[in-house]
View 1: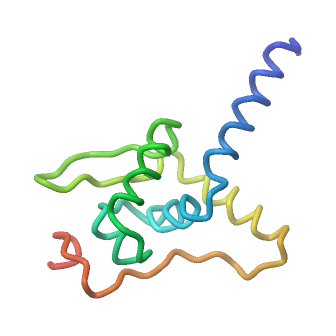
View 2 (view 1 turned 90 degrees about the vertical axis):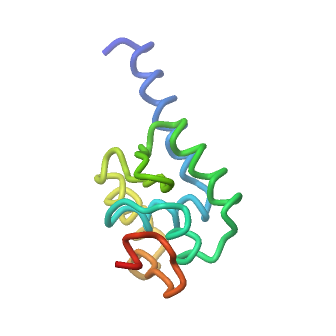
Length: 116
């Protein structure tokens, strides 16, 4: 194996872990891991402000970890590779913590998916 290509792979993997290292980003990834979600849905599940969530979504989108689609005035976000959740859960196992689970939505979410 070429050392340069190995270093590139190591760098890319390091960048992935740096991008998802934030606790808030891990929460967001777990929340959208079960399916796509809009910002208002994430607000209701996580209790963070819209601007805070949007900043993290932008970083995750820039790193090509998530992708987004627009439906009317709502933008829905989803994981590009759902297998990332397996990596996150395996990493959590090293901490001897309980199994990570996706947060549940609060009843005050106003997105079309929650209203219908």
